[in-house]
Image 1 (cartoon, rainbow, N blue to C red):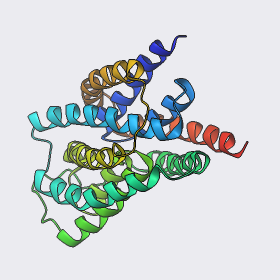
Image 2 (cartoon, rainbow, N blue to C red; image 1 turned 90 degrees about the vertical axis):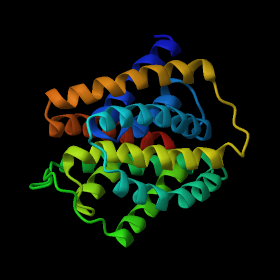
Image 3 (tube, rainbow, N blue to C red; image 1 turned 135 degrees about the vertical axis):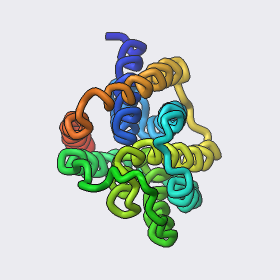
Image 4 (cartoon, helix red, strand yellow; image 1 turned 180 degrees about the vertical axis):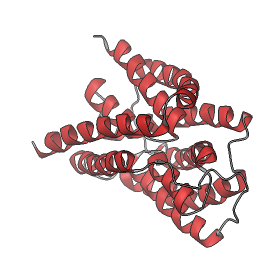
Length: 252
């Protein structure tokens, strides 16, 4: 199978994850770029941010059209993560590739386990917006921003549960709000990374991004037809398999 076909397939999977679950796409994108398309870890994390920004923005527009984005809550959450994302993004390019790969694998384990264990929170679909605890939103957002910048992930798999359980955002709005957070944090992290020259293969990044954007629309429609918990378990199992492979590879 040619690299172009692999890029198209991987992009579609990333888009489905982001559009349907509001997260998990970048945790799939980075290992796909490294192991399927031959990117080194630094280039893969930078390329993943580019892909995630375009895909998350597409998904955000789709959810916003349906009124499923809590702009104030998501804005507070995202703004708090901008500076940590930029600082961590600048730091990550100085980290050895093997250590970066191992750290990413550990994060993928956390993401996979969280996806397998998390389900819709009872009572989380109430339509009345809850008051936003500003300090809690800022602290959680800052931590998520640091993870985004350092490992080149959007952090939606952490943002969705945090929005539901910590900030009382209804599950119906958590996915769309998560995409707002991902877009802002990923843009800040990418801006910091671009200060350090990185060689990127646009011949593979462009088709990867194109199918990811299309997949984001399909992911939203798929989430409306299939149980969100079922989708989360599928992607969680995939992430655990990917994490196991990356941990073994980084240890060799």
